[in-house]
Amino acid sequence: MGKIYFFLLLFFTSLTFSQSAILEKKSVKFLHDNQYDSAAVYTQKVIKSYVNDYDKFKLGNAYIQYARILKSISRSDSCFYFLDKAESIFNIDKSKYSENLFYILSLKAETCRYLGKRDLAIKFINQATKKNYIRFNPNIQAYYENRRMAIVAEYYNNVPDSVKVIHALAKSIIKKTNQIEDKSLVVYTYNEIGFLDFNKSRENALKYFQLAYEIAQKYKCKMALIDVCINLGRLYQQKYSDLDKAIEYNKIGLKNAKEIFNYWQIKEIYGNLKNCYSLKNDFKTALFYGDSISGAIIKTIEKENALIIDEIEKKYNYVKKDSELKKSEQNFKYLIIILIFVFFGLAVLLYFNRKIRENNKQLKLLNEENEFLLSETNHRINNNLQLIVILISDELRKLSNEENSHIKKILSKVESIATLHRHLYQSKNKNEVEISSYLSEIRINFNEIFKENNVIVSLNSDKKVLQIDQGMYLGLLLTELFINSLKHAFENSQINKTIDVKFETIENGYKFYYNDNGALSKGQIIKPKLVEKICRQLRVKQNINTEKGFGLYLEKNI
Image 1 (cartoon, rainbow, N blue to C red):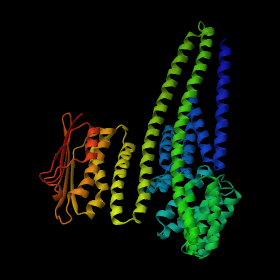
Image 2: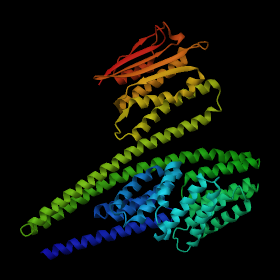
Image 3: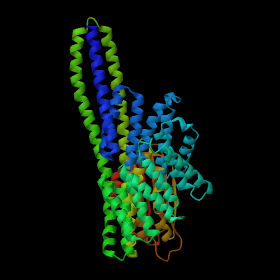
Image 4: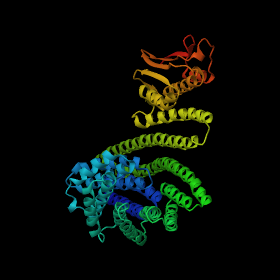
């Protein structure tokens, strides 16, 4: 009986290992074929299978691959979560897994460069440079050298010695061309050298860009091919004044970008094509590509939101399938227990102990993932609101001063809500907001309008953490009061215009004071409807005094 149990255990272990290997092979193939959405789905399955198998080091490599995929679909801000998880696994044995840790440093440096975090990018690449990387896998060496080239070229392109460093790194990569599996690294190497000569020698720049273009086409490196096409288009436009060639390469890049649904690159190419056609005086076509930019931005937002929703749905389906699988497994285990209970009582006890530990680990992982998704949702909402602000701000330039003023006030309300979501993303507790910094950011959002109207604002706030609904309505109240003061309180001829805001904590709640010295408000009966509605949401009674201007006081017990 003991042998039967052993062979059953061996069979299921082998089956699980085989499934994990198949999933991993599929995810790598999708990644190689630039099918990033499919690669993401299969890599998530690989991660789940290795979590269940307790194979930590394969799990660490799966985390690294998932971080690379997130970078490729323009979700670089999420990479660090998975890179940090991988790093914590490999830090268990730093000497044995030094190559993996070196690769993580290189990936972190590139992610920071992509996000515009200069100091962090330099910090991580310098840490990697200190490692003795010559003994590592040529592919990892080439990735580090290529990304170091990009960082040196971007941040130190005016330093004479940096040119020597870049050429030395490029030479090292090109030597390893036959050993490098990811040929896009070779493409980007020639691309970087060409970019270095962009303003020095157009002939050299063209030579290196063409080499990069040929390799990218030969090995079907679509993402790299698109970037090279963009650079070739710029070179022909700016240095050769050959608009037809510039348009030709931009259209090749556009075709490939559409095939892999890379809307960030599509948006950039639309802008380049708009400029080229404008220079050719073909304003109708230029207008078409100009209008297409907004469409690409909207598509980008839709894709990001779809990815978030899809990830949430997958988590739900995983939990549901896990529940069904556990039920069927449980029935099978009960049958085994009945047959071997007398002989293997101790084994049953150990089995249940292991099962409890496994369930606790899965629940902990699911809880961490849910917290991460909630944080991501707040971050995406903040980003999308900021993008809306940018798009509306562009339209402001086309409006009259009066219309401009109305839109600016609406923008201030949108920015107040965006500020709240930014605080929630940065906060460890997603149900609370620190009111002092939140009110301060709202006041900063109005700086431009206050300056235009010569209004001096004083804001004094005690530090206090409020529930999200209390914080949101208090922020909206302050926004509405600022707008009302700017619109109704002050005369144009009034010299000394001031607004005083105070938030004070008390034993069981807080007090909120708002006062302006607007001449138009003095002695008037003022009942702002929206302010009253917000106060009802806060469940407080507001007190309004217009003896010295407009003044509002409220007290809230929590």
